[in-house]
Length: 291
Image (tube, rainbow, N blue to C red; front, side):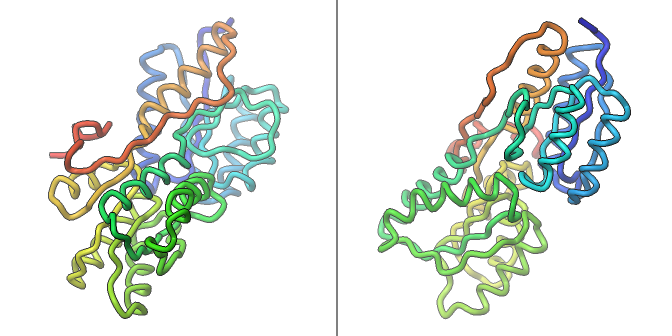
């Protein structure tokens, strides 16, 4: 088995701090394992760009691919091409739908993460709550799964927990702020909770809530350092930790073990997300990154 490997990594967009961290962890694990050249591709929030990157990886003749697909459906043909070229593929964080032959998927159980958000809302507001739900990018598997998990918990008690607005803000901070602004402008009374499918949207919503003097619980997802700092400061209520560094290290270990030793991995490895509040900040993977 070859020891010197070339592995392509591809993330949806390095414009998101979450994916910068994920790429850094992939690179660090490859360096630790040794004798690995990593080709980092930035999908730039474009399925055509990410597709082109996969075609470039095939032409380059890489030994393996670790990819977090921008869109679980739109990226399926490109990932299928990689698999058909005989290149092992590990998907990370986001799935690809309908492609046979993917070596493994390493991610967080995003449904359980959404359920953790719902359970926290019930704990914080045992008598019921009015909720704004900022959803992630349509077509992205984490957005679909987190929303499903949230509804799994709260739909059972819909007499007490009411979604007064649900709208996508595409995982983006500025959109999180503008969508929140628009929703709040149309409500007669402020919500009790703003729940968001990632921290960027939650931080955008937090800014708008502060500007309007609205005292709502704000819950994000991803445990970004900036969100952890806001939780410590008391301006953000909570986030969901999904261990992106743990996912990244596991994905790189999985593909390298397969390429070097022929080790067949589990087809599905899911880490269980947990809610992070002021009470358990020490459980956050990236706590050391805040001042």
